[in-house]
Length: 132
Image (cartoon, rainbow, N blue to C red; front, side, top):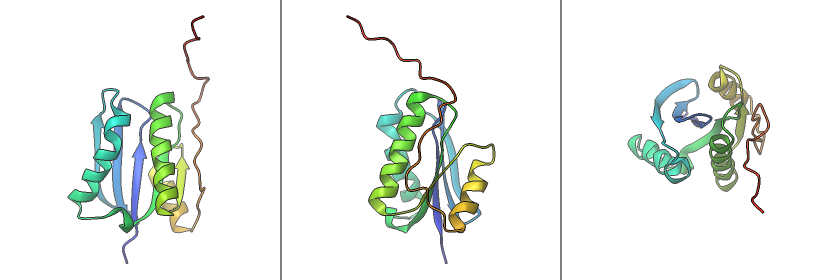
């Protein structure tokens, strides 16, 4: 039986998208998003699914890297992962270790579901103060 898992990592200028069937890598790629992550992330995910002849309904779970890293990159990637999880009614796991995919797969296969992933930035966000 297939158990397709989408993996996302968006904490730096090179985004990573993966598709696994349980522990088996089906497809995985990295791409430089050149600050266009909010515009192209969902398109890249759709292309990943189309390339592998899958529909979003074939998805069994989502793993997303939750930090530390770029405030904007994490916010965009995790927001999209949470939205997909909610809209498709699929479990989601957020992980922040070096082995984030392996640990996330293990948790999904054990039936865990965090329901919503909160980013861990690792530091306070560097936000420009409002001009008066």
